[in-house]
Length: 310
Length: 310
Image (cartoon, rainbow over the protein chains, first blue to last red):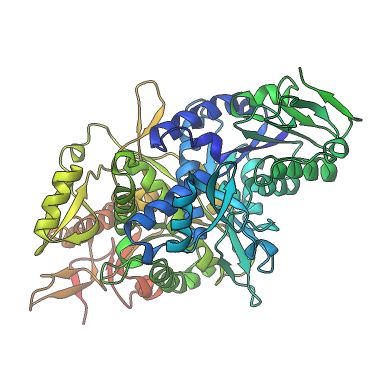
């Protein structure tokens, strides 16, 4: 089988832990342990998010010389380096020598007229109090949104249209190499009228980018790993229950949290409906179990209705 | 021909300009213009330095939360993302569609017993006054060295021993893809006794790493591009004169600035002596002219003695 697995940026650098290199490496080691058995048996392409990481880089820059802050496309590229390196190193340590890994920088085309550029929705970086948030909005011109009782910076998140390095990714996968790519949803890039490329200020949703990647690579499965163990109806409420196996039609009837579970369900359904493959959503450490239908939520084209978990 | 070109980090983000994204992109555009004609005719592998960039990231981090500073191997990986992305985007804009580029994260093995870990020599980041330098040494535990009348942070710079992603690089080059790799001299990585890999706090010299890369790839030429137009005898002195064409034996008789021209000359001679290929050293914009022997310094195995320039 050919499998695309997307690792959630929030699961790799958790906001409830200090944002240290050590914590990030430990979380990535958990992910690598979950992925190694899959890499031994299947073609594997790994993508990852970068919400906390790109937010952290933006804060570090602003603390040094805000007047010389780098645009988000360059920070996206930095996170592809940072996170991709740690995934590659931890995964290679668990794989035999004849199963090499490669981490590839990835530019993904977005539409300069995407409405996301006028209405930013993607939360990045840490949570703030209302006072802190208002101060940052004033001082740095950031867009801020409320998230529960706290506040977060939001940036434009245009839809991914085309993966410029697709041919190279395909070449490597066909040669038996585990490819780490489309990190942070890829570097958002616009093709100008003269055909040339230029990066733009945005963060693409990594689940939508991974769905595009899985479709273009004609993958058999797409697995979206995060810090929640499954997709829930009525999440955080007393009557919450987890989807076990469900058809894309059935799950599309429900509403989920925007910027969080909603893009995952959308990305998974898009993949399943267009390819006939299966998609899984669940916790980082459960990768293999989700593939086996023993954990998480599986969205499958051959289901009718919903099987609830537990 | 198969050519490895190394771009100097100092030439891409110059200390005499503001360290902005715009200035870095403009310098990289100059490099891309110089490289595009070579990429159209030859197999091309591009590496780059990261001295100013990795120093900048370290300063940004320290300004935000010094207690949560990331180690240099991760910052190296971030610079491979940042610089690699800009080179790829600017170069792709100048090449035909059938000449794709790929930017690959690269881990390079170093010896944990390398004496460089006890005696740091590689300057990174901006220049400081003596007072600033002493303050940074005290507050952050940085090693500082004098550079002319000013001061700079220095870090360990162990010798590169092995390129872990060599097989992938070779595969891509053989398929006609321009490969950007070994950025910042590669991510310094130690192989532990159990065979597993772990990154270490260092910055590998990118010229020595590029020489290793060129030798392993059996390249015909190695070109080291920087912000100086050639190798000079008596640099900065009234009687300074530039080497035009010279044998590795002849140039090895001279002494050059450590951490700057010395590793370039060493890297170039190592390549020429071990492979019989030619090596060029000169200015970013002169890449094609250096290849043609019309600019810079060329170190060639078939020379006897020295031809001076001008």
